[in-house]
Amino acid sequence: MDYTARYGLEFNPFVKNSREIPVETQETKEVRFRLEYLAATKGFGLLTGTPGLGKTTALRTFAASLSPALYKVIYTGLSTLTVQEFYRHLASSLGADPAFRKVDNFRSIQAAVSRLAIEKRITPVIILDEADHMGSAILDDLKILFNFEMDSRDRAVILLAGHPRLAHTLSMNSHEALRQRIIMNYSMEGLSKDEGRSYISTKLAGAGCRQAVFDDGALEAILNAANGIPRMINRLCDTCLLISHTDGLNTVTTDAAMKAVNDIQII
Image (tube, rainbow, N blue to C red; front, side, top):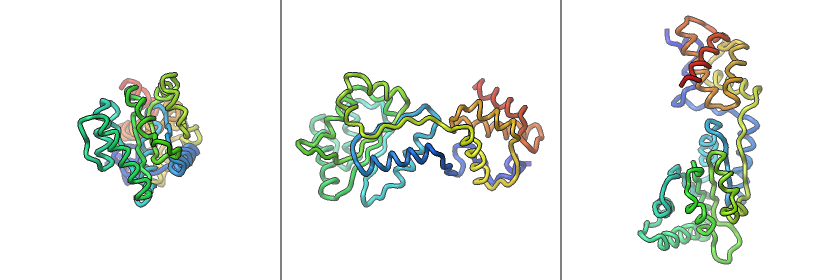
């Protein structure tokens, strides 16, 4: 008997490569509002959070929501590039021919941004994911790279996303000028217990489930161990299903959930 069929599931909604089931929470609403504000206002934004809270999902949803007729989205998670590599990559992503000299790439990037913003009325949206790994030299250059002569209006959206240490890095005196240009700053905190329960039930319903899968004790154990982190909730729920199926259980019990918690803590 397949374990998904045992629990009335059309597929496992808790594994990474399964069909995506959007779950609306107060935080996803707030993140969406903040990002929409940034897109409309332009300038620098900062989105941080510990691993597993759904930053990348939020960024992907945000990017997909932007009309190609109004925005050109450039996403990069290549946060360990050298300054020269970063310039060449950004120039290429903007449709310019990357040069060998930094100053030439600098001019190409500014020209490409200006061409999009002024001539085509398209706002470049540059998403720099895993930016907490970026070197100070790149962070130092960002404020200069997107400063256009005497024009006080921003021509692009530059969104820095990463772990909380990114906010700590930007709080240093050496990054004061960049920090002052950040108009949107949001730190993701995770799900409350009520939201965690809703998250699990929404995932199950999205996978076609119409039966009780987790007993109350199991849910409590999962949510206590996950500490509001969606990725941990997914891992624990997936492990619970496997353990319960192996034990021949038609419902995930508290004991099965505690076994799953122990298994995850060992990994």
